[in-house]
Image: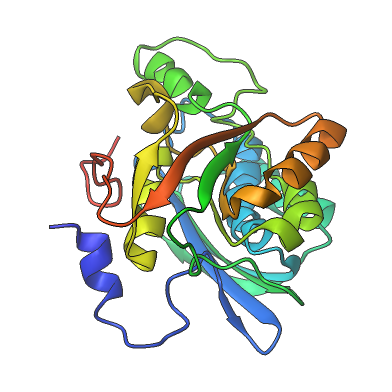
Length: 276
């Protein structure tokens, strides 16, 4: 049983299902970043932890074609954390938020054995990019290059070091891509659980399957926390999107076509597994 899907179905609001809930022009999103679930403290500095926690939350707004304005931050922190560590963590949270024009306006703090960061982002969009609307014959594609996050995570497990610019530490958010291509896109979401799992989410929401146009290696399809964009669009829009990606110097890979009664990817559940 996929527990995440099971839990989501327990709530009845029709706003649930996208990267953010968009209501009257405002978009609300919330995500968590926990020690020994998403990271180990020996892998990352406090500044890196704070920055990535904010980036993965702002990614939800970016994926919705929304501009983040405010954030609420809830912190769980060990009693033995030092003032210098707190300064590094909170400073990175605030600096990253400001880079996207977002202001931290409140939240909560509690003591715990491990670090946990839960952030709610409030953003605005005149034309949000939703997950529903994919139809048979539409193309599916992703931005950038996938696989580095999983590769570097495996290195960390082996006790090896990775570059500070690694996708695992520093995901690239595609705000310019979403804003400039929105008029040509039908559906979209960020890739947080891996291309295979997130594509399945789109297919399930739209009651379609897919036909692969290219082979996708497991190292690419199973790499989570990439935060590239997964998008669907009408075939005739492909040249427009490709032209924009050339201007942005951004790799863009069409990989499948939506098809009734088509295939699904094999997908491992990410949200209810043993801690790191």
